[in-house]
Image 1: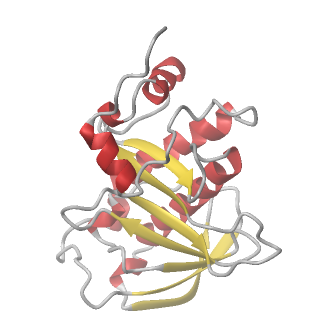
Image 2 (image 1 turned 90 degrees about the vertical axis):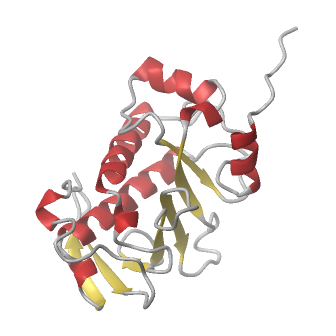
Length: 217
């Protein structure tokens, strides 16, 4: 009988830090899995990695977004600090009967060697896009055992599009933004409210130019 190889220390540390779900597996393991949603997620995540929004946004700078669901969503980018793993955190502003699955959804970029065999094999088999071998997007919902559902993957794609559109418009250069309209591909528009964190680490003048950022498409 074959035995599951023990996890490497890096994977164990990521799980203890809440950056990996208890069971990783693959995105297509679920009977509800839809390959196009997985493809779209990997495409958006690769653009997100190449954009590196954590270079200009700190985890304390929360984007309040209206128009992506029944309640506003709060988006937070991580990775700006030296010991932070890059990624995106998404949670509803409020929960209740209208949001039965309310809770934090996140993804983090994880090195391939920390993932076991299932997900890297799935990526190779289907040719999912990676911006870097050490940047595998691992998405999951807080409190769930495995990887994110198809619906959560689509939600994360739209949230990444919001971040890219926000930076493309140069809104991070302002001290605050109040219900600014942003157009998203195939999703109409959303309203974004944001305030710069007072101690946020930010690019110096002449750093990343808006025209250098990928379009959220």
